[in-house]
Length: 227
Image (tube, rainbow, N blue to C red):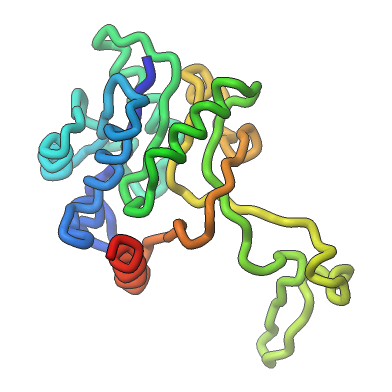
């Protein structure tokens, strides 16, 4: 079977109660749950949380909360991979036989079910451990600048300072929406980014919500897209 695991701890500090804070009229985590369910890919959509309120909201949107995430996996420094492997172990203790798991972050209001379907097809037909969405950097990273204390700008990569933009290699970054992975990969291979295939998605469908300013910008974008 294939499962979706949404890791949603309760201790968000920069945006308090971020995972269940109303975003465009709906608790933020609702977007991840609804996208997972509408994709038609998963036998179970599971929320891994240490927080009773998050668990209750998640169940209202149709997700399952069959276990409580332990405190040692719910702090500011816990990586993603141990959280997902714990979720798989906990679900397998219920008798589930898991083939693959998709980690879906809870703060992804622009996520699309079709992207998850395409990523699953890539994982199934490829030879890599993971597949995840990426987008192209808006400007060439090879021409990045640094600024010293006096305000003087310097090229971070001097060898590319005079290179035409169109002659530079395209570069991408992980958009932080979801990660498809084979069951064993979540236990044996923590290097998601370097062990995965990238699914390119448009820049306008990418938001990173870490501050209240990010939140406001993301809501404006969401409302513009869905107007």
